[in-house]
Length: 168
Image (cartoon, rainbow, N blue to C red; front, top):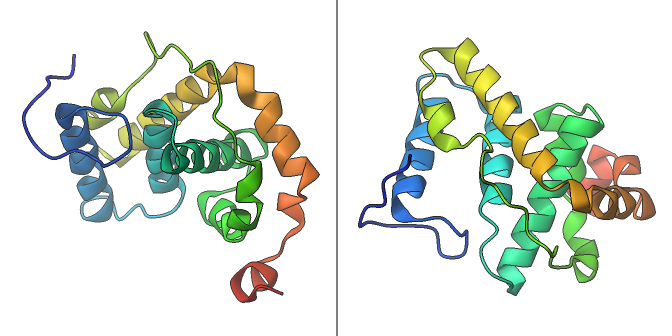
């Protein structure tokens, strides 16, 4: 159970301050103690954002759509975190195609950030993040085809790093 506390929270990600506090602690551990900045960190950020979609609005729509797309690339297409990040560098040119994915999943019973925060070492952390990411991705199952079709229609996987980085 995540306690709600008074404190800062993200401007548009739909989480309470207690959950946000745990998430920030997990990120700090990834940056400092684990030095885990690609695969596991990418999954942590994408999973948290996908599990906290907020309410319909431009920023929320973009956030959910982008993070679910990157989860799809990592979990379904097998891209590592760095490659998924590189592929995503030019995704904003398709932002007019982002839509609010309704209905939102019921995240009851899914793994959450508190489960990840309980990891005692890097191996446990990686395992917990992977389990959490799959749990949240599976909760969005009604929208998997939307994300898959977006990636395929826009040939997201066919863009190489040079094209992404230099807009060619």
